[in-house]
Length: 391
Image (cartoon, rainbow, N blue to C red; front, side, top):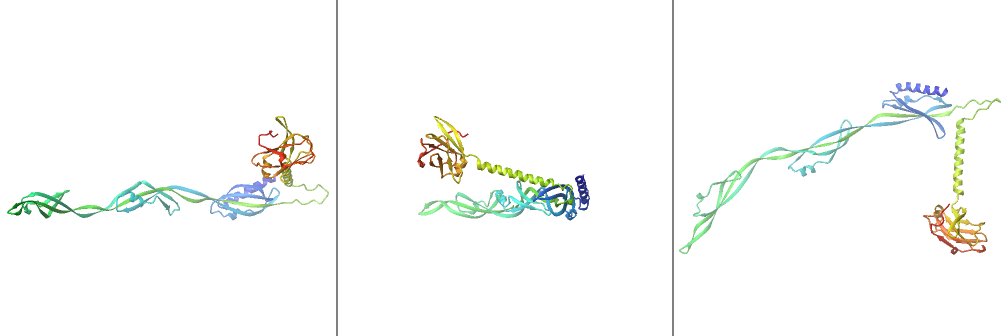
């Protein structure tokens, strides 16, 4: 009933607060434990004009704790507005050359408007259009030459005074005469035929473009980032309300259930830690096999320590037999390049170099009939993987 009443008061206070703080809307409210402290976190959604100081509450009580205001965190939630935009660019060129025009047009241009929209626009090649900027009248001179053969004399009156070329009438300007054929009379060379080259010249006018104007359209998506709403997160820190201590002989104050929960969690974590530690300390990593004919049988399990790698076979009935030792990959990798000392009854001792680290390490020990001597490293025979299967 007390918890229901606290929630009712919270909803009532926040509903009244929304009108004061420019329609701030409560989103969520929850309690959690941070760094061993009880905190209540309340989140509001408000407009940019909202005054966050009006959202703060006076100290309040809830579920046996007294909560006071600690801090307010503000988060602006942006809204990205998008739209398609275009822009027309005009350039002037002296020639109607597509390659020259495209060289003067940038493939992309930046867009930034007064309303805040910005982005990059891309050239629409299909939109490029070129028109004549204007015309001017220019005069041109046209020349031509005519060669006339077999003339009886070099009289200019026999040469045409005009000629037509490309629709333009040209006037005779000068004549070049030369003897085409001559006869000898009384030892004198007399011309009888002449060759004439008549030169004509004339002028004409026509309109030519003064330049070209090209227009191109750029298109693309532009955006603007606006603050859509503001989220305010208010944190309140709680202090436990202690009940008055009864000094009489009556029943003592009961422990808080939350304290027992913390104690239980600590005990569970301690048990899990001890179990994991015991597993890594006591689990077996070496297996001993005895070969009978073509079969292997497991006769013992051992654990090799990295600090002192020793396989103790004492107490096993292995005199005069062949023993195969399987060292698991996990410890073999750590012992790579080191020696494992194998010991048995009667001061029997051998050393074997670990030369594998990517798989299980196997080696064979031939146990003498009488275990009364110390055997050197040469008495061990490493064995490739593929021996007896591990149990």
